[in-house]
Length: 375
Length: 259
Image 1: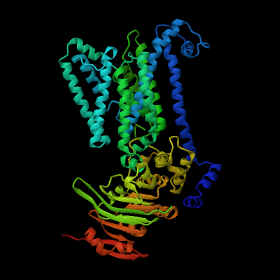
Image 2: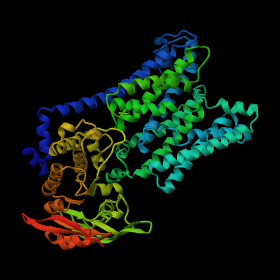
Image 3: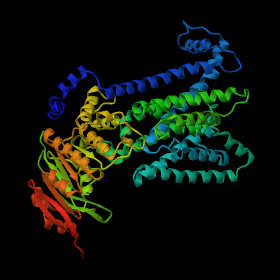
Image 4: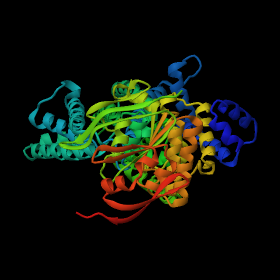
């Protein structure tokens, strides 16, 4: 009763908190402290795992490289006075194996965080970075380049440039449609599905009239492969990434609140529709960049956020980075298996991600104690 | 701070279908006010208009002589908090994090121990501390309602709006929730405005009652002047017996008025 009074009289709040802090914490407060610790520990430990696994995966391949050499080769790039490795090892690590790993991590990270924020703003556990018709748009761009020969950029970006621009255009078109009608999650998902079908149909129409050579150009893209990740492309992705990641992370609180519904969000001060449009635009930019290089790997963006949520709950300040790191881990590991399982044949990353990732996800789903499987 | 809330000529409707027509009222500080009326009379809409969850097409809402309709959403959230009728979390969230969201208008990205202390204080106040780490979706209706009230309380707004807070609750929990609201109004000197169906609860707890019919206010004042057999007959089309119980009118609905 004393506490109750003290609370109501408002002014004594601070004094009350101080005296309580000095005393013993209740069981539920300790549970909350423990939960906060586990949350932070989880994010840090999966990040550490990512670094360790990078070293291990670099050693896989025809040329024998030890884990120590792998790290030395990387560190020698920055501190050549302190670390020494053979030139051949250095070249293989830096120019062949590492760029692909970095590409995998960045693509997985990007898809993970985009999946996470899309699920939050669309209030839909089935949302993924591809809900907004990115794939259909990219494929449409490639069909135009391959069949009609119209391309926005020339040279090496003949195909990729088209994929990027059309993917971005397609999702911006969906966002604009929804914005006119009111950017609710239902409107966005409906517009996304409809526009998706439309662009897929046009691609199929173009495919129907394509020659064998044109068909080969079209199917070469989109297997979900990391082969396109050279240093030059990785740099481009990194630049987009450095812009988009902080923007998404800065909206963590608003995303937390938006999962409570638009009305509740508005009453707590968050303009749900504006936030939704902002998140969608940033996400489209990042996903279009990933997709144009790599094709579609839908599974990572759908599942990485669910995996993270199972362990650390729904606070986006932690959930966004955790989804990203898990996405990176899954994609990098799956690619390493695909590269080395039946070497020298390389199995495309997209296929391997699902084959390796789905059983793991099923295991997590079954193991979860809660009734709601995406907890 | 003691602030006054004024609504002037509020108009709202969907397409050509008017829901609120020139609603005017004025509420003195630190009062518990209920809005009653039949289904579709515009009570919930009025609550949502005041908080600008839906934007009124005309009129103004003044708090402390500042116009809510011209404020940024974050500023509105500092003056007004809102307790929805119910809430489903698509992704399970624990009670503590659900309440912490109410600190959004005051919080930095990192959050602070002070914000967490405020959540613990409110949890203790409403006697739901032990639920802090439970999943919101797995709580009973009464517990969920208290969590939603707690979220509004940590928002520390001067005016709390509630949309039928007792509609899904048994009678014990109805009284529990109403007692909490009455206590908060008194001790924290805030104003609570709620849409309510139960006329007897409204009569027992309200300082002032606003009775609405088809988007207009038909009666307003203390319970004795609003809860009368005549008003109930004309607004609800129900013949009712009204008796006084500890100075508050209580009603017993008898029969519908047909035709």
